[in-house]
Length: 243
Ligand SMILES: [Zn+2]
Image 1 (cartoon, rainbow, N blue to C red):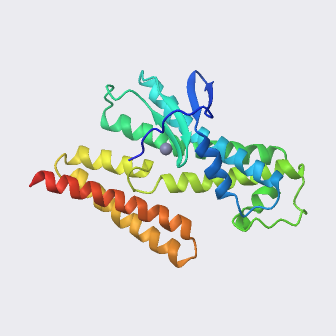
Image 2 (cartoon, rainbow, N blue to C red):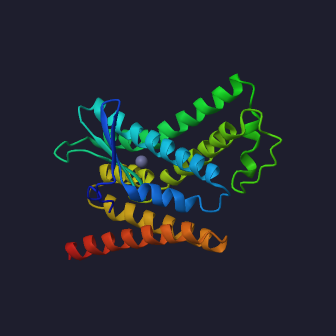
Image 3 (cartoon, rainbow, N blue to C red):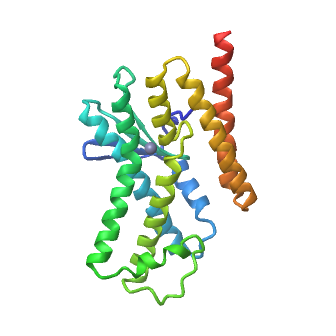
């Protein structure tokens, strides 16, 4: 469902911990789009930086655990977050696949813990108090105990990591949570595991789409409708094949 986009001349390529990373230009465009409600170019740059770091940390979690199983992965950041790609000839066992899937959100939560720890050490926990207002982007400046930009960057990093971690743990394929549920159910029952995991994906995606549409979050709602439809299509295909 998530395909690797073709290479472009605008790709940014670099290596991190020996893992090749490619950033597709659509990644910057979508991050920019998601931050459209922010005022001013400085805020937008900090937002994009926070999205970039957070998604990179998430994918690095997957990639580093894969590497402990002798697989050499590569990371691609593009329009819908990121992808960690590896040679499909490698076959991981079910619990190894679950560990690899969990490592992405896990790395994000460890990163969150690290950020919170640094803030506590600096005695700057005021930034964490900002969090209840995190979705409103309203700051009056009184909480800028660090520099204003550093505070905003931390604030965005926390926001993106919480959102991305929770979203990815939803039991909806192809999100990490969906992969974990699918691996586990297929291990329990190879015959019924896959269709059951797809039905769970459809039900959960439908419930979230309904929630977002009824709470004025149209873009998020569309994303979950797209995941619902993709899972429905796969379910149709495998049921047809069986008959
Ligand atoms: Zn992931």
